[in-house]
Length: 407
Image (cartoon, rainbow, N blue to C red):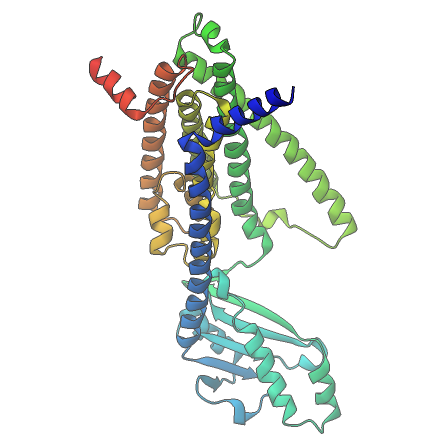
């Protein structure tokens, strides 16, 4: 009995290690990890560089000291006094100065500093808040003998920040991010879950030889589309259930915790919503075509699952570009990966939902997604037609093209 167990163990071991895919995955995983770490490091350094550049580019900050607290000795270099709040805010709004700090007359009671600044990027929206607080505290330290100012120095300060972009006030509330967050979340749930279902559905039927019986009564394309429609409804059901649960959680949490969401402040831009919906459906169809192709090309489900992980990693790669995308949503990197296979749908969804996608990029994105879906399904159908009944070896693209040339 012991020898039989060892024989089976040896056979199973050799069966796995003799496959090239085993060694490829061993090599690919650490390489991909190192690449992702490098991207994350580059992303972080890019953000730091962006913030540093914005600090260097600050040329003028107006100080409206209605409370009479800021010391003249500290107003050097970029700092300039302004006697009128409206004039200072107008200069910020027009872009003539970078920021204005207003210390109102009732500051002793309100403890509130008003900061008005230009909106340069998401990551630097609060860059002047600490500066405004420190300027006040340094001024207070110069008159430490005044008990009122000592109490003010030790108090908790509040900063009211108003940002301008192209002459308009920028809405900084959490509600403005609900659409981007929801769009990305729906994409992940739909694509990740459904593509996995499609892979297992094709591979397992092929592996247990049920595919032979099924294909005797229906052609391959009808079978694939039937699976796609059925699994799409599975995903929509999952999203509906998750939506109901999430609504319940939000309702309960708002009663327990002081979390208030003003739904009237959510920007329900119908154009952006429809565009995000198109990119989500396109990404889902593209990933589904990839999973059909992989499932049909591989003889076993286990091999298909291992190989498909490469494409799944590629599809979630934009996460590691998050810092770069937030810092420069219209930068070169953001634009390049907006039209790259696997990363395109998610990046286009994100950029569109935050209003960082120009009209020509939106149109090009639609054309690119349609092209990727068409090419993906063309290859998936060919791989399925050839590989669905091939149970002993994987199907290569050379086999597909050779058969295409013969026909």
